[in-house]
Length: 407
Image 1 (tube, rainbow, N blue to C red):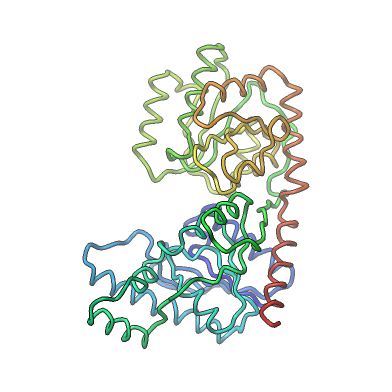
Image 2 (tube, rainbow, N blue to C red):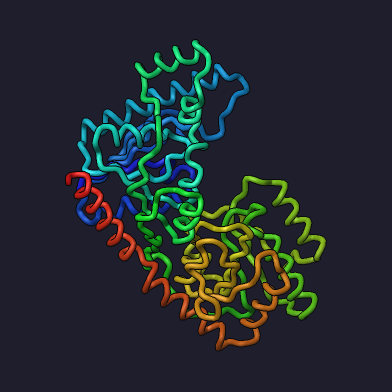
């Protein structure tokens, strides 16, 4: 297959779970003999660049917004001219069998409309709630789908139609791959036409996250992820305070690994640690490159997944389970499809630090339970959440999309 992948961001710039997943998919598809070209933004660079089939050409609107309406329109017009011409150039150059879109947020939704209008098979991989609210996310789509009441507005629309594509009507969501059943069910609840969409759980390259056979003494707890309020990191700190103060287990430690876009929240957490007198027990590690996370997992025994919002899926619990950590978490949203209570993880109600602490104590007091959860978690990842299974499903799905387009 010839595949053109469109992604808003692509490693090594703006690395998140979505972007890492896209990179893994591209690498795996190439390894399977497919011809893969990537079109992404040049976010993080001073100017566009091309390297190894990765075209960092797209302009995104991530982080910029002006009060001046006219200036916004001109910036959007510039973005659309660049992005649409970039796509058309690559379509003409490579003639892909399928255009595979990973989250068009911040780039241009019009690219999906162009691919469809030019009769290219198009497929989306969705890792978040984008399907639910896509009509309100793309500023170009929103601008030109408002009712046109003034003559000058109508004339402007006619003019722009001669220059660029104005996405209109509804987006074709026939070929959508969701990362979790939760995301699909949520989209259906909002009335989106995705009843035939596939659910393809994401998977890991388990060789990168090997099982650690060793349990440390004393036990080491770990949080990995963004340090922001909806991730519930404060619950981990409060649970640690209960364990140390009420159960007098002063040797237990917690490492908090991850960067933050919310320095006020980080300051709040550090003040909480100071207030509880837990400076010797809780360490703020900060951002760690994903390439070095495997080492971090190997140094710990219990993983805390403290999220208080409905997670679309959850990559870090899989990495922890693959590495042999026992997971304690909230199982919100799609993460409930990963963590099975009393089998692959121990669960607690979100924002309930006391029950979280009680679940931690169960593992600290019962080595057999700790070993049971660790081994079952690893088995579940190997069986159900490995990258080869994921790519088998993606590869088959893309082939069906192409066949459907030809029929």
